[in-house]
Length: 402
Image 1 (cartoon, rainbow, N blue to C red):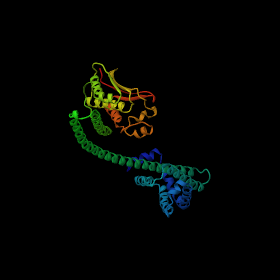
Image 2 (image 1 turned 180 degrees about the vertical axis):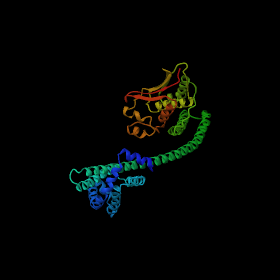
Image 3 (image 1 turned 30 degrees about the vertical axis):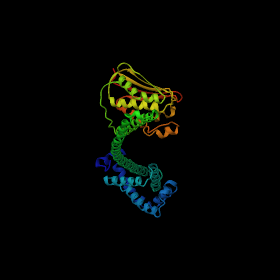
Image 4 (image 1 turned 120 degrees about the vertical axis):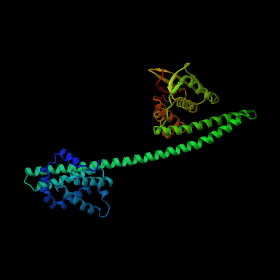
């Protein structure tokens, strides 16, 4: 916005109808106001010191006297009658200074109004009552003070924009650093997780030497290893989604077959955990989507349903056509449900703390955050329904279904 060009100067003066006649009147009253400058400034600072908020800003020893000297220069310039680009720049700097020291705009505007009141009293006191020239001079003074106020507010806005721009750049820098660190951590974690799983699978081949309880522990260790791998991938994908770089590879996908395979992957775990896991899917349901993302959405929703419900819960995965070229995915359970007041938090990356405060058992909370990001990237919608007493349903609508 700054510096202002000569065209900007002329446009602003024209908008306020600040004419050559106004400038002449202000030059003519300059001598009068100069004689009363010290009294005006003293009255002005009495007003500032009467308000606690401005008084606190003027507490430093000697500060009021220093500011009075600067104010005198400002006041005399107000009626100099030469309102060119240099005047505009000078007034902008005044506004920037007040913004920098933290003077709120409402106090700034109030102080300007008081300034105008005192100067008006001096002008009217020097002319006979009702004198037309006094009226025109007061109007001219009002225009130039309005101009000063507008430049000051512009300076406030410009400084705020500059700070916001600098903050955004810093946030972008921090986000980039975070992404680099996230990718490094993910890379470093994937290797040991793969190594642990390989050793567990090797141990599984020697099951003849293990007791039944040891085999159960081995299977549980393998599941936990898969859970950890999924959590690591969630962190990576949520981080990518934050910066809009979650890749989508569209291909032909049989959603019904994918649902059946996803349920099959958790069938053993569900039985051992005392849950019933079933699938309701048509013979085929071809859509065009990203099979990898869909598989991870299924895995996250099924895993959550098994993890956060008690023994005896029935979990059902349903897929089908929703009409209008859309496919629907439902993952439901007949568990104790989720309180309605916390439902909006489920898909948020940082909602875990509030969920735990509500008495819900949650992990990182990144699984559902990933699901939301992935469904959005696929052009679909995801929502959750629960009355907080019985059952929960996650519903996903996807496009490109026949």
